[in-house]
Length: 127
Image (cartoon, rainbow, N blue to C red; front, side, top):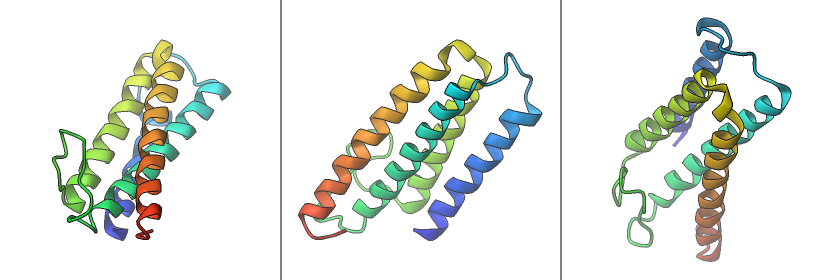
């Protein structure tokens, strides 16, 4: 789990640095957009943690994401969350009008699933 989360965090840091310094700037990020990006990154990372925690109990839980399949490996989870996180930040960087709606929307979906996963793990005494 530590390796997976370290990979996810490292990719997010690199992507964030790339968005701020290496990519062309259609428009600078506002304070509100930076808050939306922070919300998204936190919710996406927490969702990755809870998704990975579910995989420790394959007889009790399964993943509902059709891209990941029912029982993804730690590497698949890390790759999926890293790529989708970076892609989301890249798209919202290049299309400023999508920043807040996409980041809050996708962040909200991640938040919902992270809470759902956590509640299941806590209810069954596995957290």
